[in-house]
Length: 219
Image 1 (cartoon, rainbow, N blue to C red):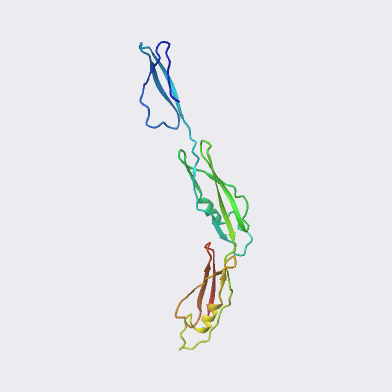
Image 2 (image 1 turned 90 degrees about the vertical axis):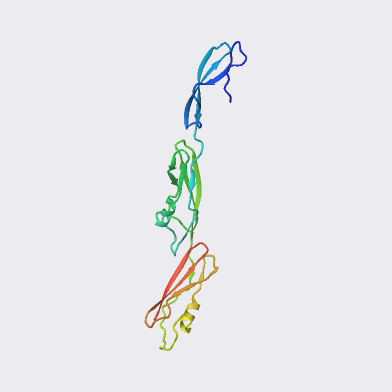
């Protein structure tokens, strides 16, 4: 609202600032000094208080939801390094206070499925921000399990992944994600395969980045 002054005689009274107003008012209270002057030259000083309050809550920076593999377990501890690292990535910054403390309501170990976690940040003016993130526990891809292979070969055989016994071994390896959908399996081996022990590594990764590996020894 505007500031006005009245006089017993004059219909309009001029108002004058004693000091120049700041370009922006700081947080808190600022006293503005004014003088009211009528046509007869009578003056009346008075003070006006301008109060600036913080109403803006902190803003979050988050890593997004987390997906973890159960790997045959029925739960993952709330202090698992993967969980703690993810929690530490959630931060909040306030326009006035800078970085502020973030709390969360994760108080128990995590079971299969989705767990919602509420993060809260409060600034010095008691403005509160909250955000909900999720941790989902899923089974890692399932891969066909094979035993190590012993191959009989002669010095004239070309020992690579196309060598029939090795090709047959590779063809047996399949993988599925937690929903039962087939996944491609990558194969890693050093060629040419040497006489003696060789390592073949099979890997499968699903759409959420969960992976399964298997190592086979071929002799």
